[in-house]
Length: 262
Image 1 (spheres, rainbow, N blue to C red):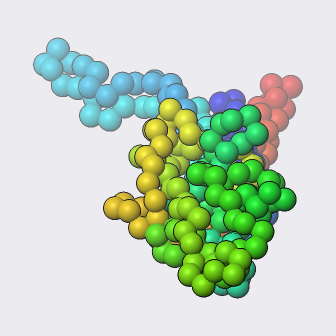
Image 2 (image 1 turned 180 degrees about the vertical axis):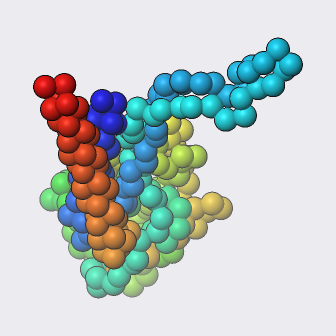
C-alpha cells in the first residue's frame, strides 16, 4: 500500500526535524550561535485523473483531478540569522556586533572564516586571536605593556603603551557581510565559510554604512528561544506518532485483506 511508504517518509522527515531541534537546544548557550529550522517539500504525485481532461465531445472537462501524493522530504535546514541578545561580560577583549556583519578569522590553512563570536584573547605574541588561537583579521597586535585597552563602536582598538599618557591606535577590526547569510557553510567552532550561495564577502568596518557597531565588554548570545524549540519538538513528536499510526492502520488493513483471502 502506498500509505506505508508515504508515512515512512513522514517519519524520516520528522526524525531529522527532531535532530535539528536538539542541536538548537544543545547550543542555547553557544556564543553567536544561529538556530536552524527544517523546511519540507511534498514528493511526486501519481495522477489518476488529470485536471482539464475532456469528458465529452461537447468540450466539457474535468474541473478537479485525482492526485495521490507519495510523501514528504526535507528540502533544507536554513539558519535564522537574527540578532541574538547581547550581555555584558566585563572582559576587555570581548566584542559583540550590534547589527550586520561577521568578524574575519584567518584559519591555519590560509582560508578566511567568519564568526559572530567575539570572545577574543591575546596569544603569547600579543596577537588578537580566537579561543582556538586563530588570528582575528586584519591582524592586530597588543603590546605586552599595553594598558587600558578600549574598543570603540567603530571597532578601533586603543591602548596606553608603557609610560605614555595618551592612548595609541593599534588597529581597527574588519567586518564582512553577505547577500545571503543563510548560504554560509558552518564548519563548527562558531565559524562559517563563504560559499557560492552566500555570495562574496563585502568588507567594511564597524560603523560603516550597512555594517553593525562594535560593543566592547559584551558578547552576543545564541538566538535560540527555549519555548519555541520545545513547542517545535512537541509538534515534531506528534507528527511522528501520527505517521506511525498510519503505518499501523495500513498494516491492519492489509492484514484484514489477507484474512479475507484465506
